Image (cartoon, rainbow over all chains, first blue to last red; front, side, top):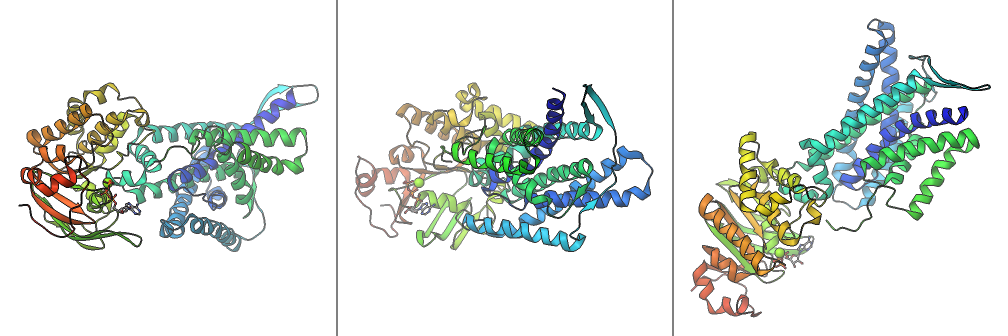
Length: 304
Length: 249
Ligand SMILES: Nc1ncnc2c1ncn2[C@@H]1O[C@H](COP(=O)(O)OP(=O)(O)OP(=O)(O)O)[C@@H](O)[C@H]1O
Ligand SMILES: [Mg+2]
């Protein structure tokens, strides 16, 4: 029981991180109909920016942990958003209107490019960081096992919930969110109504990158080690989450993220940790075969 | 208000417009009739920059808008209720109307007033305001498409086959609304129609399009009485009008 609870906590934490990344995949797919395979790298860049920001901020001291955290988070979101914006501008916009395969190849190219870029700029070795937040709460004490909920985990879950609520409000209630949904449903019509479609697509990449940056920062705090390759696995898992939830569906991405996180945690807790990645990929394959529209996605029926 | 001068447009290698010239004056209802595939919808879309005119000029209130991006054309005051209505299916009636107001960067008071105006014109929309666009009936969708176009307070309204697929009673409702908008609000309307009879009845002037070019033009009443037009587009006839520029008798 204690062990189960611990895996649940771990899984939810992981799931929150995957969910944040998955939103970027699903939003971009919704609006431009392509899988942004470089999104995992955007998340990786967010993590690197966070490590660098912590390194610069650490010696400065003062202000306390909370302020430092907020500053790092904002810096990472801001700079990563710039990367996301640039990515769209340079690699995808010129290809809009060309066959989808072109954009797909461009995305894979950008993914490799960004990996190499970070490897060159930051070195291939893993970067480790002193834990910034330590400690936690003992939730339950069993005879052999103590369930703990660390402060980092609490922060990840609370922050993710807050962000998703905020993000949801933007999409559902603001003019920007409406324009975003309109472009998703009928881009040409949105333009006829005065929506600047290019700008809306840019903003979609910016928002997706900022959320990925939060995930990157969280991972830095949670695991303390990163390298230039983390975007690959996390990217594929978040992509799996987006497909599982139903690609194009934002609640689907959140749900899919949580499920993938839970599955991974329970799999490594009860079966074997070596094969935890296989679990995620098997799910991707199974979903694609048996339910391509995902849990909350809608089947491609309506012609818009 | 709108002046099209020798417009050519292509879809890939297919030429859809072959040097179309026409004009719409302020306060007019001008209709464009023609057979399926003549290029009517293409002309309306070309005015909005999608597809862009490959040659020729499009002037709106004296400004050359030929190269403007679509959203800028919309913001300049051209509203388009396009072929197929193109309601956002997963948005509510209210949200669809709000999308219509995007082109109008104005204070909230005018916006609220316009919403009231649209609801006054089509009370059915008010009843359905929280229903999703995709679940509306064809007639309701058409009302919504027109209502949405009106939400920006346009100077020129482009309407593409508003009567398509509607029961006669609904066609009457829609055409009455168009005539009212023109008469009471002075709205300028450029109307594409298959239903030539209804269109010519409410229009001031008309153009006949054949194979991507204007074949005839003139007063609506004159076109309505014209033998050739009658044979081709009225009286259930499907005869052809020869391509080439020609005036009304
Ligand atoms: N998106 C497109 N791609 C390729 N060809 C197109 C496209 N849209 C229209 N066409 C072609 O351009 C020509 C003109 O089409 P358009 O839709 O403008 O005709 P229309 O006069 O509006 O006809 P209808 O009365 O049937 O609506 C047709 O030959 C049509 O096949
Ligand atoms: Mg048409």
